Amino acid sequence: MNPAEVAALLAYAGELDPRTANADAEEAAAQLRRWCELLQDVPAVAVEGWDASAVVRRHIASSPWPIIAADVARPWAAHRRALLARHTDPRPAVDPDDDRAYRDAIREQRAAVATGQAAPNSTRQLTGGPAASVAARIGRALPAAAAEQLAEYRPVRAAREAAAAAGRPDALAVGCDWCHAPAGEPCRRRTLAPGAQAGTWSRRRTVHPTRTDKAAAGRRQESAA
Image (cartoon, rainbow, N blue to C red; front, side):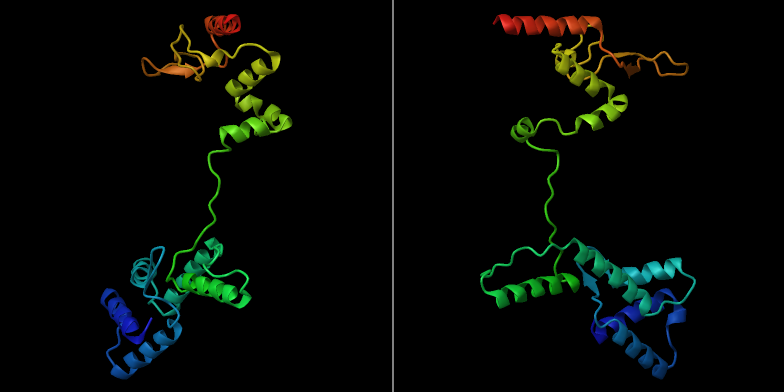
């Protein structure tokens, strides 16, 4: 911040907390010098929601102690570290064979992030698992040992995997004519617990027999075709 921005920040702090204001002009000038020295590397406003006036307001609203310049400088240091931690040095638009120019461009990028002039550039992450074509080549996402340990907590998934391993038809591939559960969803039954809301359902750990028969019939028709 430049001296004008620091003076405006001090005036704002004095308006919210009169203890910060100085009636003596000499003391006010000394306070301004101290704040300018400590906040010379702190921007008034920067990317990712940084606002020095908001920091002042939060401190005065939450702390019984009068605000000092360090109460603004420390939050900015933490904000700056968070920005740099998310920055991954994207490839600059310079010739990578020009070693000096490449290093200078990287330094400029980091300096822009560190001073709040530019948002950090984070590496994109894969989400949602592999594509279907990739999944078909790599097989199951979990090792067999891990899947066995998780079977108790994933009964529906475990039942489908067991059926596939045994060569039985996948009952969840079709809808259930008994409880009207759609394809891909487990069978259900009405909740009979005391105090339960009328018309509520709970999931069954096993499928209705008619659903298994329906899946088997569908497999036979596919084989015949």
